[in-house]
Each structure stands twice: as structure tokens, then as C-alpha cells.
Image 1 (cartoon, helix red, strand yellow):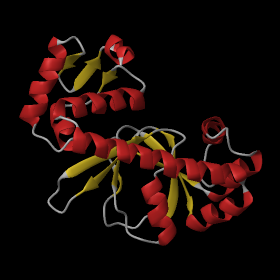
Image 2: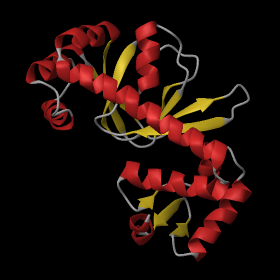
Image 3: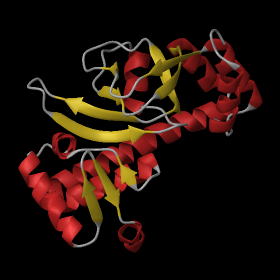
Image 4: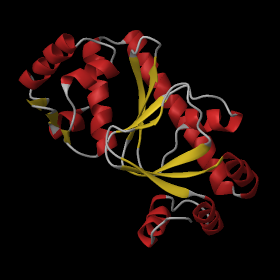
Length: 221
């Protein structure tokens, strides 16, 4: 793998341990590692993604972006995962329908689309990974749509924070009120008011630019 250090190879074996040994070797031989800083754009709506992407380290936020700049949060990607939408767009050589931003220092594995297609025929573990990726991302989007269509903003906010807690694997989430408002397509004032109510109910503790989640609240639900 060009420009890949030994620790990257070890990390690939660790994160994608479900892959067959021959598939991992092919992945190493046919891909590169690309690093992104926190808040750096990986792909924006309308751009072309010439490669298939797997997350090796870090966390990626995926969302839809409208012509007027409004955002609709879809899901997070963590190590061992891939974006179904970008995989589909790359395979069809279509422009991206989503925007993806690195939420922290992130490393991605990038390899040619044709390689992905070849693996579908040759490796059962890759076939199962792709099918699982499409299914899981589809279910996540359906859940988001369900909350948008049928739940109040207070329930949507709770669901959003639980996902944040789950995706980062930590109770202290580095996020501010404005970012939450953008992700939920709401106003900062509404989000701040609801967060304050949650704090009064001992569900969380508000800090400047980060929120401390009460683990007891998460485990109760």
C-alpha cells in the first residue's frame, strides 16, 4: 500500500477483522490512506467521489445540504464503516448526494471503484459487508425520518444526543448549541431551551462548547 506505515496495516487487520485474509491483503495492495483534520470536508454535495471509502480512524458526519445551505443530519460513520450513499454514487459515477465532514482527526481507506466491484465476485466477506452497509444506513435514515415526521423536537433532541453518545463512545460530547440546531434544522434558541430543561432533569450537564451526558439517563432508556 503506497505511503502506508506498518501501524496502518495493523489497524486495518484490527478494524476489519471480519474480512478474509486474502481480502485484507488485496485491500492493502490496492488502497491508500488519506488523513483529514477535524471539520475538514471529505466530500460535498455535487462533487464526484472517484474512490470507495472506508473509515479507519476518527468519526465522519454525513448530512444532506440544500441549495440555501440548510442541513439535514443523516448519520455518523465510525471505524469499520462505510457510507452507503457515497458507495452508490461512486459505483454509478454520479455526483455526491451528501456532504461528509470529519468531526475529529480522521483516516480513510480509499480504493478504486472497480476494485470494489471485483471483490463482490471474489470475496464473500466483502459481499456481506456491502449488503450490511446498505441495510444499516437505510435503517438509520428511516429512523431519522421517523423522528422528523412523527416526533416532537424534544424527542428528536434526545435521540440525537443518544446517537452522539453512541458514536463517539464518550459521555463528554464536544458540540455546541448552534451545531445541534443546524443538524436538527431548528433554531439555536429552541435547542438551548430544550437542553436547559434536560439539564434540570439531570439528563446532562451543559458546558461551553461541550455537553456532559449523564450515563444513568442513557442506561434507563
